[in-house]
Length: 81
Image 1 (cartoon, helix red, strand yellow):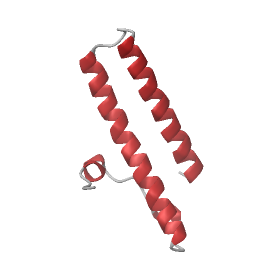
Image 2 (cartoon, helix red, strand yellow):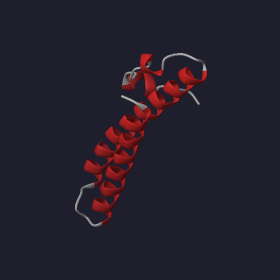
Image 3 (cartoon, rainbow, N blue to C red):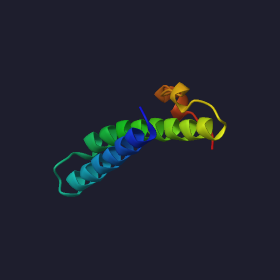
């Protein structure tokens, strides 16, 4: 997956997030369901951003960005910032 594809995936996930929030606001979605779906979306977004950052870093270091792969959610979600 190239950088453009990752960026498109991020945009699609952000759009899904906005749709979920609109559904909740319009009472089309229960708060518990929204929280569960948002948690899954946020995890996917974190994985995409992580992959994109690592691909860019590899490219900047003169390495092959295609050698970067998606890290497990458990690894990406446990980052300390």
